[in-house]
Amino acid sequence: MADIIFVLNGPNLNMLGTREPEIYGMDTLDDIAGRLEDKAREAGVDIDFRQSNHEGHLIDWLHEAQAAGAKAVLLNAAGFTHTSIAILDAIKAIKVPVFEVHLSDPQQREPFRHFSYVGLAAKAVFAGHGANSYELALDAALQL
Ligand code: DQA
Image (cartoon, rainbow, N blue to C red):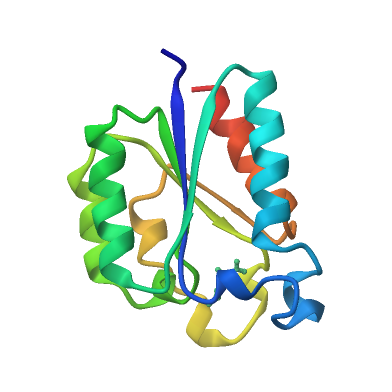
C-alpha cells in the first residue's frame, strides 16, 4: 500500500480564494489540494486532504493520522496555531512528524500571530510562500 500523508486545514481556510486575497492569494483550497495530489501522485504517495472550522476535528484527525500509519501530517491550523494548547498536546501525543504550514508569514504580521503553539512541536515550519508553502512542506515530508 502507498504511503499516506495527511494535510489538515483549520478555520476559515475553506474561504480561500475570496478571503483577504491580498494576504492569502487567489488560490482556493481545492486548487491547493489538486496541486498537492498531483505532486504526491508523482512520488507514489497518497494525500488525505481535509479542512474543518472546529478545533476538535483537527485533534481527532491528528490522532487518526497516527492510527492510519501516516508518514507525515502537513498542518495549517490557521487561527488555532496561536491559541490551541489542545492541538499542541495532540501533536505531542502522536509519533507522526507534523510540518507547520502557513500561506502568509505570521512573523511579519500582527504581534498576536507571532507565537505558535503548533511550532513548539512541529518538525519544521513553511510560511510566507502563499500556496507554495504547502508544496515546500510536502517536499520536506517526502524526504523523510
Ligand atoms: C494562516 C495564518 C494565521 O495567522 C491565520 O489565522 C490564518 C491563516 C496562514 O496560512 O497564513 O487563518 O495560518
